[in-house]
Image (cartoon, rainbow, N blue to C red; front, side):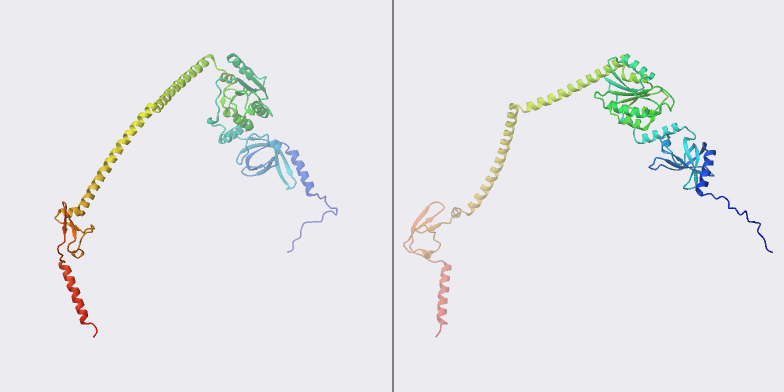
Length: 435
């Protein structure tokens, strides 16, 4: 069975048609009118800060989310660090971003939930500066014991400076105090404090101590002394800095970074100008240090003098002559011992060679009954064949000589054998010669 649509043609006139821009503009106007100022709480996520200085983020809860933006001028006034996961409450207006057709929250004010914005900013900045090492005790400079000039950076009309001056004038009347006037709270106060601290370092006659002071107040009143640029300027100061901000219960970052923290401006004056009892104590300590130093210096001088005297005595001509004499005696004794050793060795060698020569000497042979016979020319006669009958010969005995005349000669048995052998050879040669 066929069905029929219930749609029926409308009037012949065309309905009004809006552009996307017109519709978006109408929505934007309604949102601006109805949500001109709202407070919204949620968790931050996707926090980003591009070069423009604006802050972009998403504010969300368990069921929904909305994009948010904080323009640069407003972002510079937020004291704490925005990070993902932080629970905050935002005050602002809802607006439409036409290029995307999305709505967003334009934030004018932001507060962290659970603690105030300044408390959170203080805690975050303190942790960051502590990681950078600004609060290390070893970086703090000692105060001079006898300062001559003091520069006080404060409001000249505050009660704090009057309390400070009253103490200093009473306990340190000869001291010179320079008041550097600045604002100590409100917008721009931190910049004035930094400029004043830099100007003090540029003075021709620099002070020995710089004092940053003001009276008590709320955390917001004291916030200029928690600004990062001032804290870093105090840390970079080459002159010792005393921070005396607020009362005992007030603790600022300047107190933590300063070389000395005074609980009150009055205590700052007491730290600079010692009382009579403190002067006496300081003088007693200096006297003790001087006495110990002089005693130590005297002991070192005596030791050094004794050493010089000993060295001088060793360098005296008589002492040097005595040492040289001892050395000569030692060398002489050493030479004598060496000479005796060499002489004994030479004697032993000579005796040994003498015995060898004695054994080989012809005289030793003569001593055993042998003799040596020379002809008239002195030539030794070793064969009877070299002399003839009637020759004069001289015979050398072990003791004395004999002169004789040869009556006859007789060859030795070996010579007779040689002669016989020669005769036999000749005869044989004759026998086997050619016919």
